[in-house]
Structure formats: C-alpha cells, structure tokens
Length: 288
Image 1 (cartoon, rainbow, N blue to C red):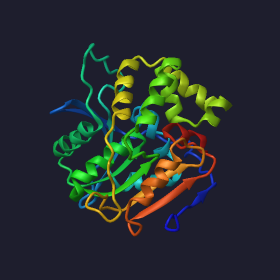
Image 2 (cartoon, one colour; image 1 turned 90 degrees about the vertical axis):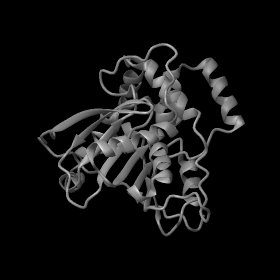
Image 3 (cartoon, one colour; image 1 turned 135 degrees about the vertical axis):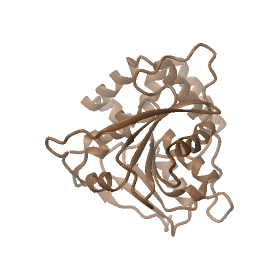
C-alpha cells in the first residue's frame, strides 16, 4: 500500500450561472451485438483525442455525466475536446423495452461495440471516462485496443469477477430485495441510503419508475456476470496508458478501487479519493 497515492478534495465548485446548453448530435450505429446510441458534443480538434464516456448501471449518459460537465472547471476541457457520450443499449432516453428472451450483450461485447463508434465518427484515439460498469467496459476496451486509448478516468471500478460468496450473497439478496433496490445499493453506500437524502430519493424515483426498467435489469445482470480483468502490475495484462482511479470515501467500491490500484503500473496510475461523496454518477450533484 506504500505506493498508493491518495488526494483528499473538499473544495466545492459552483455551476456556471445561466450556462447555455451545448448543441448535441445523437447517432446510432449497428454493431455485431446490436445497435448502440451515442451523443456527440463539440467539434473535433486536429491531433486531439475525443473524450468518450460510459455510464453506470441504472443511469444513462445524462444522469451520469451531465452535472459533471456543467462545472465551471470543466469549461476549458469542453472547449478543447469533442465529447462522445455512449448510452449502453436500451439505456438511451425513449428506448423501447427489449422483447422477452432478448440476449443482452456482455460487458466484453459492449466494449467491442466501441470500435464501431470510432469508425463511424472517424476518430482514432480517445480519453475514456467511465463510472462503475462503464469503467469496466472502457478498461476492457483499453486492454484489447491499447493503441487507441491515450488515458482513462475510472470512477468506482471493480475489475474483479464475482466470487462464489459474492454470487451467493447476490442471489440471497435478490430473494428479499427488488432489482431497483439492489441497483441503488450499487450506486450509493448503505450510509447514504440510510440517510435517504433528497439526492437518494431522486435517483430511487428514477430507477423504480424507469420506463425501461427491464432493460436496466439486463445491463445489471451483465455487470454481475462480468469476467475478471486479470490485471497484473508486472504482467502482460495491464492498462498501458495513464490512468486516474477515482473513488468516494463513502463509496461501496472503495476496496475494489484500491485493489485495482495495486495491480496497475504506479508510474502511470494516480489514485484520487473524493471526500464526503459516494461518487457514483448521481453524486456529482452533491457538489456545488
């Protein structure tokens, strides 16, 4: 643990007053694993990578990242980089519910959709920003396409497959808890859920009353069936780009992020701990 780099941040940054929304273009592209929808903000800059985001379970790109990119400190990034926000299949606004028996893509297959997006947009490299399940997807993509990834920001990543004990606990929890409650337990810590803040109530309402809840459950199942990334600090399987690992001090995934840090090259990896935030996608709204 001596190599762990931890930074505490308590300063809050307000949203820009009267900020005008950016123009966005939404596209869909067919892939070997079905159609995927993504929204592009900004104009590509020569010789600069695109920022590509991937959201967590229970969210879409707006509920996961919109608040983050509205911060005043993000404006320089917005002005200098094009952004591509990917919605996992069936998570985009207005998405129809998949028919009964639909085989939802695995997280590995979701990662394999990304080259189709980049080819469609004619982008050669990206900086990936992912939360939870989205962080896993981007990591899997970076392992198989290292030459196209210039950097990663991985928030609350769990690179490990579920063990037998985790699998059994998940099954037992499913007997007494609904899928929305289990997803909320993934997005927020038990302390945050017990506090039942306005933010938690807001996202409980979003998940419980989501018109595409069946689709969300399919994404959730794919996340829980993920393979181990098998990262090795000095092995052949590792992330070969600069990586920023981010976790909140109330996040339910802190141990997993710390373990992930121990498996990555310390000269290429930084660890950032945000104080007083569970720091899933919704938690950006707690700042400011």
